[in-house]
Length: 160
Image (spheres, rainbow, N blue to C red):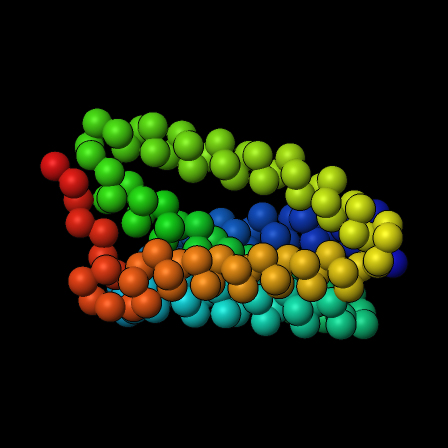
């Protein structure tokens, strides 16, 4: 069980790691790997980290696993947003970003309900295993949508 002070620490640490990841890590990784490589690696790391979180036996392990979870999540979000904005006409960029954010907000509304149900019925492990499964689905979806890593499908071409 996590105390209120530990939960507050986790939330503050997660916010700090998210800011650092978005400002420093994602840009650096984007300079050394392609979008396809980043999305595939981030999805794999997220899937494995969430599955490992289901077996976390201590608060320290939870904190340790937060690092790859947050970095891979911010990487996936930033890279997918960049990919999406280059994939639409310039005048449709705002609508595409708006739809992206609306989808994220909708997921943010559904996740607590689903997570609460899974936690109540099956426990902490079920929540993390379900999240790992969804991250795995995202990995497969990205792979399929980008043509399985074929160079002609990897980089979105800006539509004029």
